[in-house]
Image 1 (tube, rainbow, N blue to C red):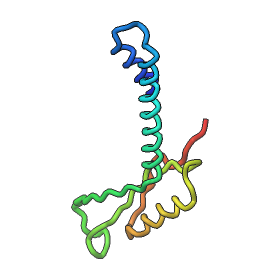
Image 2: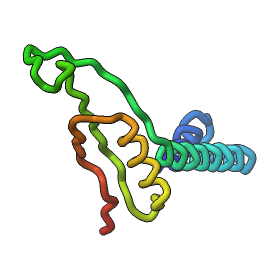
Image 3: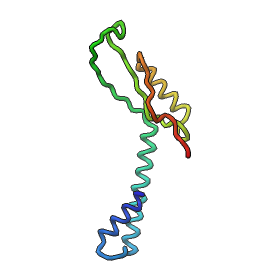
Image 4: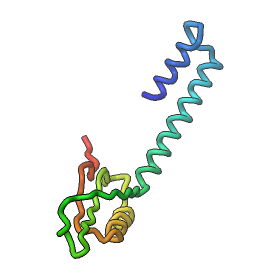
Length: 114
């Protein structure tokens, strides 16, 4: 879809009804570079574990002996063909390193095949 969109933009920017062979080749190369770049970026981000820390203040202070509760939320794992056991083990290790009081698992944890 991205390749078709870029090709159509190039065609619309051209003053002629049809693209010359040179412009068509340039459009094809640009489309391929963008498509490959998007795939490489997607593969990289799919295999990278991101962590974010937030502090939430609550009125209750009896959550633990320190008056704090540590919660870990994991989401959008999309386990399946693009994942390996070692990646899952890395995720579990990172979660365990957080020493959380509660672990929440959000949606998007399995890839679905239609």
